[in-house]
Length: 543
Ligand code: G16
Image (tube, rainbow, N blue to C red; front, side, top):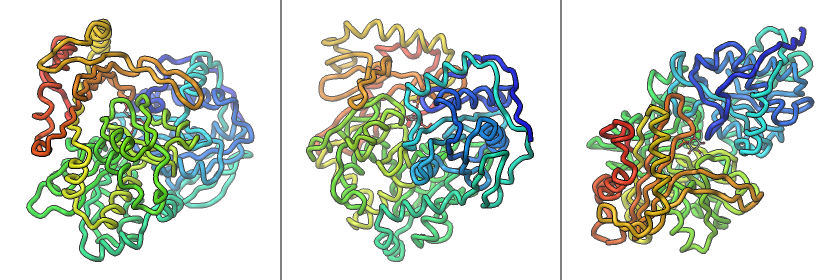
């Protein structure tokens, strides 16, 4: 086996986005693209000689081949050990747990999350640090700088390692340990929640459907829900991971999780329905004839987490990304907890979790998690809901009604305009940004603007500052319209418009969110002139 030092040159477009580097699969497959980025990760984190890493992905097309390249490059760069999920599979939260459990120097996670997979779809790669969390902005900047100056990469000429068998082998001087992707994670879940109470609830006839969307959580969900918790066989649907997710988007929202939504809208819906995404870090929560917005789910979990053994002592604090609704802030205020507003991206929660300032955090983009790992965690959120059902004996309807009665209801919706010409999307943001200083006091579609700004975040733990994190228009009475361009898309630009309004009148807590938000939606259009800039009459996706 020989180590090759191959000459290369910088390739444009290797700047990590909200969550690592996401591109069309064909781009990742193009000559030197993957190799350049992997070498830049290795160099950007200060070299990898003697270090240990966890490696795994969501099983999408190109997962296995990319892992082969990463392993041979790791061996050539002097890595001591790579711990790899069998068949190259690891959910993102399981990878985060394995990094922490094994005390490795970090991990490489191969996923484009909820984006579609396949030769004509998307692929992604990100680096997580020794705390198990996505690399900080400072680290991704280092990696990006390396991509711009790269001249060569190292790779071992060697046969492909067999990842189908759990075994310890060597690749050059590097140890490769292939492990069961599920068991350590399942043990962690069992240590956090009251599995006996949840099992008893299933025995008593509680019915759930969990949609794995043909993505990575299938084997995890079957082991945890059906085997360990005794939910009946068939509780997990679409539980066989597929390299292209059956041609769909493994995105747990009412649009893409259509099969689950149809079951929950049927005449005899189960008590609880949930779904997770391509790499298992997102969750969607539903009840009979009910979709629970991720922001409401976060607020309810923050309110009731103490019912699960892991959180019985209460929470240190909570954090949400800026566009996530303010519902969780009211829970934090009522309980006297600290609450934080961070930019979009799980990496911004890492310091707060590491410092013990927060226990729970979440995002409007269907991510919820706690300090048990440093990623959002779809199955964890579902288990916390199950623990709450088991501890309270209440239905989803009762839990929501109680929450809204206590805290009011934040009507919430996100409107996405996808694959917009990048130039047009930037022009919209620039025009709105220019208007911000004059908006306070103006009345727009019946709402008075209280304040308008561009969000910037000063990390309270390390003092770093992140600017240009979204345009915020705050209206009197607690309504908000937020504008951001996505950092995870692979085609043109995706404009995200986040809309919310607080309702406290007891007789107005059951409206359709789109109707309840009508004047916030109209104000967003008036202020940003979305139709004129994008040429779109309506959003592509409403969640
Ligand atoms: C990633 C990030 C999340 C973020 C989401 C959407 O999630 O980890 O923190 O909220 O993207 O980001 P954007 O609005 O920039 O597209 P995932 O599940 O895609 O890894």
